[in-house]
Image (cartoon, rainbow over all chains, first blue to last red; front, side, top):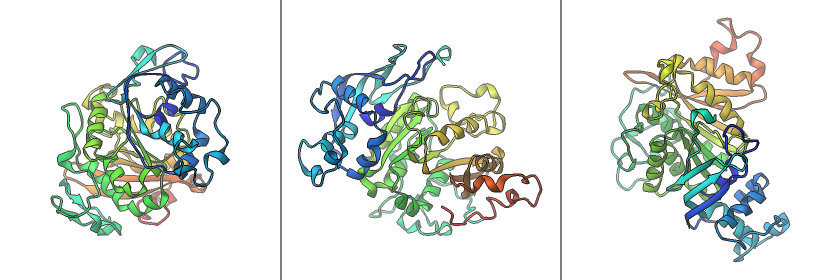
Length: 131
Length: 278
């Protein structure tokens, strides 16, 4: 599971108000390089919950990958920024698409119901009495 | 009906097959040296509790292949398969859209955790990636992905079965469709409409027994136009692959007179099957 998906995922357990963002814990994660596509980031960024993304990176022990506040779009999409190591767009790209959580859990902020992530796959299934 | 071929063999479709709905040229085993456009059966993972690629899976992939040029033009940002089973379909989609690179990302869900793992293995065997999630349809993703997904593909559990079979956890969840095979389909459609983007396309397999005309009609009432991308008759069933997209005029055709035999609906979508609306 990549952090892009974490950013879209909520707990659907009975009793949850928003069920979002899910608290991420990871005992094992890895990175896989993916070509940066600025148009993809540009299209997606308005839909990204920045705080949830930052919280997820910090939960993985990456306190400096992303700043508390989203940088202005002029900075993110500045000409040539994609070619500059450590630029905002490269960090965002890395956070969203290159980090794969292999083992861990997602915890509902409202109910503390925990959903396992096993071999990269989050299991959001509920028991009948939880729906 | 055009393309009503009775073919069922797990044949491969090569580049040659693209470029016209009737021009589907079926190959036997993968011919060496050719770019394959689909997942390769020997590389598709399997599990006793997971539905193997079958006629319906091939029909869906063939329909996507026949729309490949349009899909490439659409440049979907997010593609998603609901009920990914073996992973054959989402893997094939990722392969046929490979040239879009990281501008297109893939998601897949299945209610069956064995299917999710099998899909992951199939994706990995082909060197493509999708985030796979064990969930019921799009539960937990509906709000986060609202209006964001450009292509949704679904091969739903469409087999008419007793209602009790609905909700079974294992392989039965891949086929058990309840009354008229519609029970799960009728839950999938509104959920998918939530996540489809304004320009988004839904491809879905349906059986004659599911009353595809009725499905198209229900979708038209909520603003979706439809087209039959492919019809295929096998020994056991008549399979359709339906494509839906938002059309502000779709609903205006629908009422008030779709009951008469000469209404628009008796004409659509089967006679205007190949119109180039989308």
